Image 1 (tube, rainbow, N blue to C red):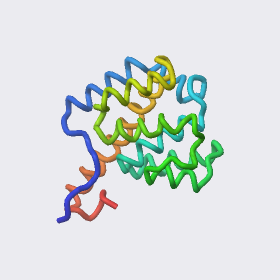
Image 2: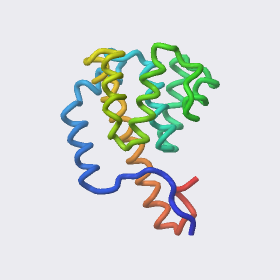
Image 3: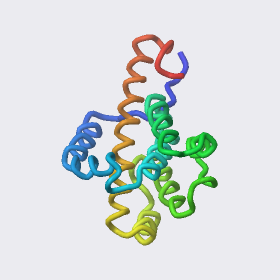
Image 4: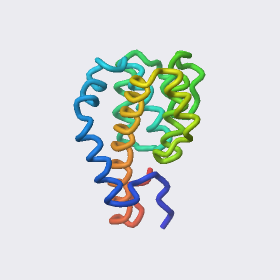
Length: 161
């Protein structure tokens, strides 16, 4: 059986900590999701940037659809999922690079990179960006963990496209 290649939750405590974060920040997350705190297209770009790193097929499908509905072109969408940001508005590029780095480092970004995020967007907006990143990362890891269970119980036939 081939090896499962996607990022998943490594422990129950990691999953529980993410649940606690989501519960504690539910008002902020609601504000992000309804477009009141972060522009909807910017939010979808952040979602795609993290999903591109984590490779969650469920989130890729769902957020690609939302991105297209919010006005993001299919070329830009594909670019973000592939890890480049050349077609993204310049004012959002650093945030997307940070989101990719954050996901790639499993939520432990380089502190200089994080300081630059705060310097670029201000403390409040940087906090909103990180909250959006943590929210989609939870969805990605949950979807991939479910795929891993599917992969295990079907002896590698399902769950790892």
